[in-house]
Length: 400
Image (spheres, rainbow, N blue to C red):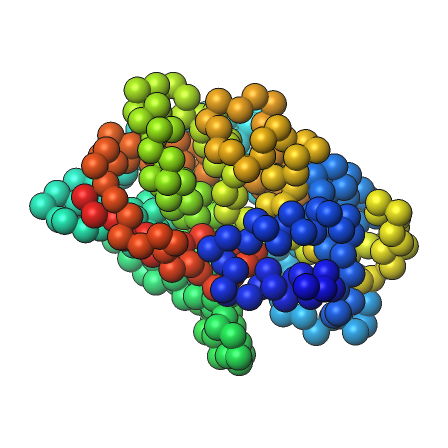
């Protein structure tokens, strides 16, 4: 098949269960120009270089005119699609109550609470012959964790699950479907969630608790305060982006371990390998498969000139299986050394929720692994979400 239809084939739902042969095809091509004018990059070293190249923009407003009509995935204010220096400012403010150096112990202090949440969800499996790892475990766990982190009252967590589901579903477009209505409903859920979080934060102004919303609005340095709009966008981004990737990481992890019973048994015997195993899952079955960028000038990539302003699609999951970077890349190896994967990206846009996702995945799998001994998959491959970018099973039913 023609390499200029590769992106179409990656996006084809029929290839969702196993896109990796297509990525091998892309690596052979080096750089693949598509019929829509975009350029695909699939080799590890080229992707890594581009993620660190200041001539590459995350801001879709830098696309050339013919490409600007592409659907927007995030609000423009969101740090995920801004460039420096504005990105650096907003990311720095968002990080202050989240992690080092200003809040070095916040995430580690949550380990006990995350473990308790995981155990409560697993206890609900008792007496059941079949459970869905997505609906019954991987989906509710991260929502509860992020709600606790932000300071959302427990009685309001159900409405957050509804908003989160609506926003995620708005990106799950079926072939031939007009996405307008889904995107409108998803956009409304984002606005409602943002308003709720800003109002909740205002209630904490002058009356702080030990949560991120309190820290945002009670920051003593005026230069460290987010505007109302920035606070809403940052809090929604943390909840939606952090939740969606963690759901996929946990679900892909369970699926991979059930497909590799020898490694599952080893992790049951050697739980100290779990942190390394999570890194290998981020390489082998990452939750995010691609990211779009825009060249701010004509650039050379592997001998091909990529013009200014065209969509540049970095296939992170392809780079993660590049044999020029990883030995035996098609093998799942929880003891793999030197695992500098692209599971959370790299460069200035390295996923800032990555440390939390790692902790959640380690705790979730540690809780599940002892229960997976005689478990079988009901369906393999399972039904996947529509998205080729945020790839993971929509359901993962297992027989206990």
